[in-house]
Length: 101
Image (tube, rainbow, N blue to C red; front, side, top):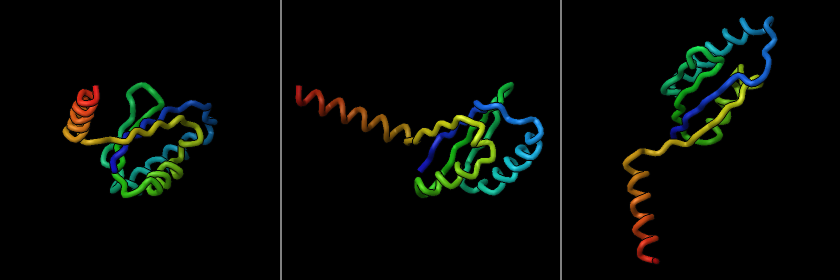
């Protein structure tokens, strides 16, 4: 299962803990490099994101629970679906709705 994760700093991070949080976040990214396919920072913002590829929601929850900047951030998670599959489902749904009408 793939998920798009977007995390934005929403709470004041005490300046004295920022260097440690940066180091911890780099270590977190290395730890989960097998489950996080892509990871990036947003230019000019205290924000970032990535695409997690996990076997379960519990695995995703573990990854997010260990995010060092998590307590200072607002994190959004979106499930991702293959475009061809999603469009086919939409097409079938429209066909079904049309058949009922």
